[in-house]
Figure 1 (cartoon, helix red, strand yellow):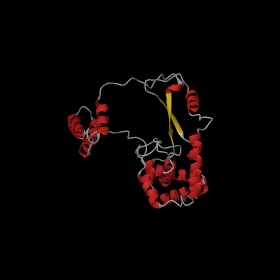
Figure 2 (cartoon, rainbow, N blue to C red):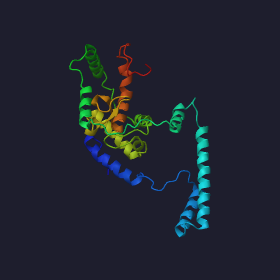
Figure 3 (cartoon, helix red, strand yellow):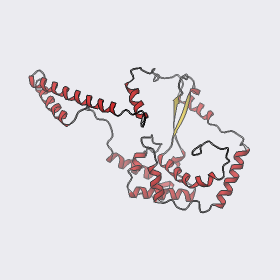
Figure 4 (cartoon, rainbow, N blue to C red):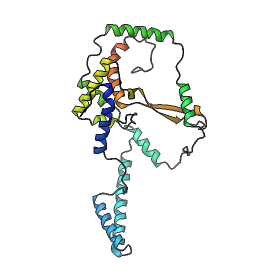
Length: 278
């Protein structure tokens, strides 16, 4: 049973998504996993385990063990040849360099040692870094006045979002990215069924019409990362990354697609940051 598609019903929707995810998405790790174990090797391995349990010193156990090692060695050699053959510095250098770095024997210095600085100290420093200026520049005030005029003249800027807009927005979401506080990942959204997508579309339209969003969307999961070459004992040596809810980023993407053509006409030619193609 889906909750009402409004901001106050988002928590129930989040719980519903996680309930379904736990039932249908395999989680945890494989306790028994051997690299290169195909169907043939798997059969040999099972026979070897049985023979080993009967008597590890019998000839059948030894023969099966040697045979299994030979199959695994051949499989790993084949995987290595495929890996080397796929190295392409011209068209896909990112994956190629990732493979090269894995093969590099140089060990990076251990940075996992616990620092004397506390999480509260780091959080306090991040808050200081993020404090806005008390005075606004005249340019910012001028731009706000312009956008207020644009908003008054564009009453039809936000008709209800369409299914095609939602489909395009989901298509452009980046996979394999960390989720926000709601725990709903990009992969979950991409595999939503028609009813879930219809619910999300109704939620977005409700948020746009009422200028109200779920409370959890206003919060971010902030992670402090140590800057390269900085002293881990100093709170100022850390920089934050904020993980927002993916559905919130999808909502922002839909809004951005609507306002970009209008905002572009209002920006000065000197403005280059955060503009496409500049």
